[in-house]
Image (cartoon, rainbow over all chains, first blue to last red; front, side, top):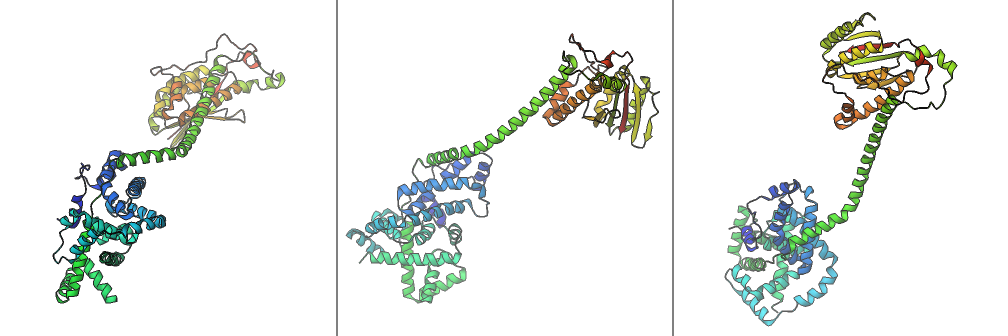
Length: 213
Length: 313
C-alpha cells in the first residue's frame, strides 16, 4: 500500500458512497445541473480538508468555519476549474490559501495563547518523548498513533512552526501529498518545497529535543 | 553550511521517496559510510512518523448542511441585484410586447371599424371645389403587385391562364423578360376580385408578395409587405384614394408586426380559410352607412382598378 493510500484509509469515508466515481465525472454532472454531484464531492473531501485546516489553524471552531468557507469558494469557482490539475489539489489550494491568509491576519492574537500552551510539557510527556527519540529501532506509526502523550507533544511541536512550514509538513506527512502536488497547492517551486520541508523538519527536531531539557 | 543544507534536503527527499534511483544510491552510500548521517536519517524518520501519526480529525457532522445553508444565504444575498436586472429586462420585453400587441390591436380594430362602420359624422367638411376637381383620380385605384417565386414558370403560366379566363387579357400585352413578366391590368373591382380569387390558389408558391398602393396618381405610396389576396380585395374595395391609403397603411403595419411575431398569428388570423376557392371577403356595410355622402360616391360610373402585376423569378 502506498503512503498516500495508507493515509487515505485513516479518514472516515463511510459517507462517501461514490468512491468509484471519478472527480471529473462528478464535476461534469454538477455543471450540468446535478447539485447532488457536488454534495458527493463535499462528502468525499470534507474530512481531509477539515483535518488539514485544523492542523494549520489549531482551532476546531475556526477550522469548521474555514472548511465551510473553502467549500463555498470551491463551488462558486468551480467554473474556473479547467482540469489542468486534479480537483483534489485544486480544492486543497483553495482551502490551504484561505487558511494561511486567515492565520496571517490573526497571527498576533493566536501567538500569545499558543506560546503559553505549547511551552507547557509535563514530566511524563518528556519521558515518553525521550524514549521515543532514543529508541534505535524504526518507529511503528500505529504504535505512535496509539500513544496520546506522544501525539500531543507532536502537535505542540507542529504548532511552533510558522504557518508556511507547518503547511508543507501537514501536506506531506499528514495528507501524504508528493512534492509536485504540494508545489501545486501552495503555488511554489518544487525546489522551494524541498528546502522548506527540510527546514521545517529540522526545526521540528530541534523543538522536540529542546522539550527534553 | 551549504553542504549540510544539501545533505538535509537529500535525506528529506530520501525519506519521502522523491529521489531518482541514482540519487538514492548516493544517499545509501553516504548512510553506510557516515554514522552521523545515519543518525540524522533516523531522527528524520521519527519526526516524519510522529507527524504522520497525528490523529485524524473528521469534519463536524453538520458540515454538508452548513455548506448548503451558506450557499443558500449567499445566493439569497446576490439575488436582489440579479433579480432587479432580470426584472428590468423582463419589464422592458413585456412593455415592448404590450406596445406591439396594442398597436396590432388598434390597427385591427381601426381597420375593422372604419371598414364596417364608418364614423357618423365627418369632422371637417372637405373643400368641395378642390374635391370635385379630383373626383376622377380619387375614385380609380392605381397599384402594383410584385410577386417573387422560385417556381417562376408554373406561376407565370397559371397567372397567364387566369388572366385570360377572367377576360382581362385584353388590357395590355405582357412584357416578357428572361426572369420577369409584367402584366398591366385595367379592370373593374369585380373583375379584380375574381382574378384575386384565382391567384389565391398559387399564393403559397410565392416567396414574397408586395403590394404598392397609389403608384401613379398621388405622391404618397404605401407598401404592404406579405399582403394577402383578402387584404388586396379590401384595399381596392375602399371608396376613394384616402381610404385606399388608410387601409393599406393599416395592413402594412399589421403585416409588419405579424412578421416579427412567432407563428405569425395575426396574419394567419386574418387569412380567411375558405378551403381554397373564391371567397374574397367584400366589405360589408352595416346600418351605419355614411350619413354624409361624398361627391365621388354619388357618381354612377364604376371605378377602374389599374394594377401592374410583376412576376419575378
